Image 1 (cartoon, rainbow over the protein chains, first blue to last red):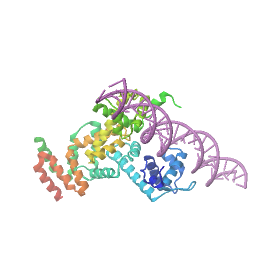
Image 2: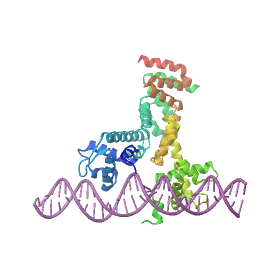
Image 3: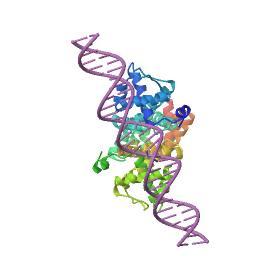
Image 4: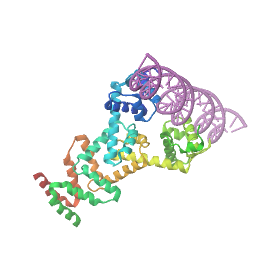
Length: 183
Length: 183
DNA sequence: ACACCTTATTAGAAAGCCCAAACTATATTT
DNA sequence: AAATATAGTTTGGGCTTTCTAATAAGGTGT
């Protein structure tokens, strides 16, 4: 048997994280968070929610008295916010970088969010920023990913984009390409 | 209560996938796959393995008679191979694209592998190929990701790389840059 | 052949997450 | 206020994965 301190120290389960994220999101969407809504959001039945609320309450992640409105504690809020951040970031990566449809991306991000650490997530963010920032790459570079996927390897497209990027150098670049071909 | 057909149709749990992957990998490494080795690989105790072997056997994913050597069935082999593919791909993405250390990448890939579908995984692969293939990008482009992360946004580096890429055009590009600066 | 050590299995229990059915509280309608 | 509808809870049970302790089988060495 374990005492209260042990319970508080145990790592959160993926399920708990999901509930906290759902509560966090619902809290932003509605004035009050209800058992019914959590159940619907997570695709579980109400008794399951009641059960979990007790657990989360024991762990001091929510304030909860039965039949009363529930609220996240500071601790619960932090977790909810963090899981939401992961979800959002991973979904963005899947939709914006890999071109995966929103629904699939959302579902898979929901499972991935429990697998990645905060530091790995930061790398995802930095990577996406890098791709959107680095001038040689740029956001529209990703457009060619689709073509690459669908029509095979066409380095010319990438080259073409490089020329476009050059912008102000347009004239000279034309020459450039010639030099390259001569080589 | 459910009959045998129902059991066979149910989706596999992440745990089952982990066991099949471990068995698949051990099968390549050693002549025979032993309970002890599976336990060690997955960080569980032997009885847990024996238990799971029964489950996998009922589901016709392995051939297994107690105290005898075990083998993956065709079905189990397919799953094991697929999970291994996911693990390997995701780990490569984390190490090669995001520059995450091997150990962390391996651990997190192990959890992510149950979250992504086969089609999402294919996108990961295509994305990595694209990055390594697209001439404007190239493998060594990723080197600048590190600098970007550690020293902030330095578009010049990206520009510099673009010049390098140009290869044969080196001389002309120097001109190019000037034009750009004038602009 | 016997004893010993390693490997594997069974039995029993706990934790986590889920459900259906039955019950209770709260809210709404008349 | 009584009747009804909706929301929430309790009870008891199922399934999965894990464990420890106890037992059994297999392999080794003398």
